[in-house]
Image (cartoon, rainbow, N blue to C red; front, top):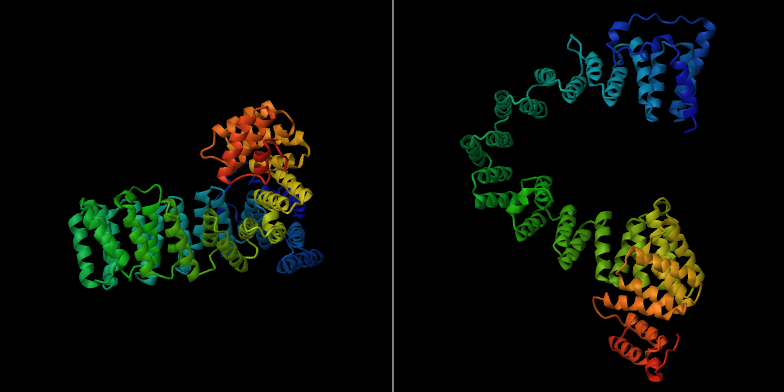
Length: 592
């Protein structure tokens, strides 16, 4: 972006030009440019013309080479020589737009159109600039120059003007222009349906109905137009005519499944829910209804804000998903959506199977892979997670989430060296470097892995890196402080971090246990006893590690009987240190 400073200097020069100054002095910013077209062209002498040609063609050359900075400078120099050069103003304006200098681009394009008032490209760009700046009336006014009285305007330009008119509320004018296209091309679905929509917008229902009749008359065997006409009648409360049109479709084209959705809506309006559902299911069963149409309808049923979902029971929605899979077995989106719906119902076993079926059909689905792998991690099925995550990485080697999950699986399988290599390689990915929260997760897991490898220095390094990214990462704070306590290192820092976890989550028994253990290591046994008792009180179910710590602390406070009780409980649970049995045998605390 080095050329931004150059751009700003050139803009200062531009704004000093007499022709431009009147557009900055409070006059109509998007004035009707026809009022200021009689501007005298600059006459260049031979020397000036040579300079102008050199700068202009160098600008063209550097534009072709995509060297924007140089292109801008040369066009600017040419423009200094001939401030009536509309092509210079156009090229400079495009560069300014690329740098979001929209208002400055507008000033230049006003000048470009002044000197070349019917250049199609200049008109299109200036109208788009006006529209971008919220000057809709000016956008329409300048765009209408694309239309001429000789009837030679292209269909593309007429349609552009019509759509711009729609955006700015000139509905009647837009309809008139669309009818010009209709007269030129004949009746066609895109144009006449657009006219139909605009008549609906105007609440001109008579003319809207006529547009549909035109389409039906022009193509009597396309029953979709009759369905649309029936929907029009249904929307306007004419149930008899709507029902008649739908039945006519069933006579003309009984395989047209779209009519069943419209019939379903008809019965719903009549309060016949059973017939509504019956027709809805028929529509889903039809092979002649586009998958996307069905899928959108299904998504509306499972969405959070659609009242129609209350019409269907959960089992009925599941049936609709199964119909879609049967009728459109190779549409992977339905497997992904069905799996997520099952997840929302808590049916994770079935969701896992559906996700897997989708990936067997098309394994090039990154979001499906992500949801599937995360679900496998929830099942703690680390063998499968390891296998599937490695497959996902082959398809998407630059996707860090897959590497993270692969590393976690290897860690849980106690393949520590492989896990560390996977995550260290993941840290080098650009998507990880640019995503600090994700980078923090990589460092956090690497800390856990390196501690399991007895590499304390590397463990603490990665924990420090994780905390630089998020100083309140509660899991890292807990693990770091606990491992410091186990190693008997920097206990003051360990206490500070552990206390922070209690502030963040006061009732968590794991964090309370860590805090108690840090206090134990600092020989503050009475404080440790108070904290460990809070940990035990907050347990949802017995935990051997915490109960063993409770026994250790009770022993240090002189309660041997209480210590033996807690040690015995921990032994029965099977979660304990290697020295627990010796503690019970010797009836004394034995450090690991």
